[in-house]
Length: 111
Ligand code: FES
Image 1 (tube, protein in one colour):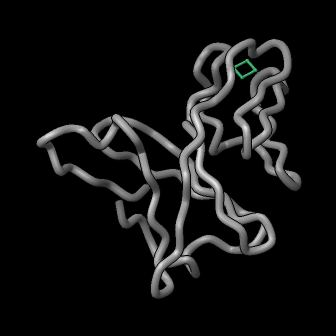
Image 2 (cartoon, rainbow, N blue to C red):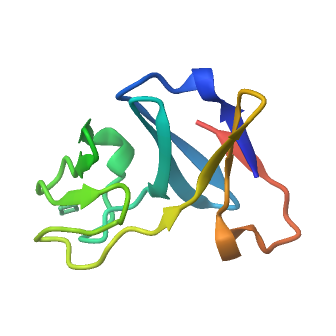
């Protein structure tokens, strides 16, 4: 699914998107792009309000760390984030949201 221009997310930054009520985040780490689910697996904080340092995303609520490449979590989160493949084509980013895209509802919203 086409998400945005690669220029919309600066190096070291992240941006949240919603597709069919499913929230996910796209990250730019030194112009390599990654995507994960956006809700902390501890108690659901919006991780787009957290901080990113390299490949480590930190939840603003209780400081769980997530590896944005693997989704791997540290306590108090005990479940990984979902991770999605991001590809570039003609300056645009495409995210494979897997089964989240299997719907007839084409609602798409950029926050
Ligand atoms: S809600 Fe993220 S660590 Fe608690």
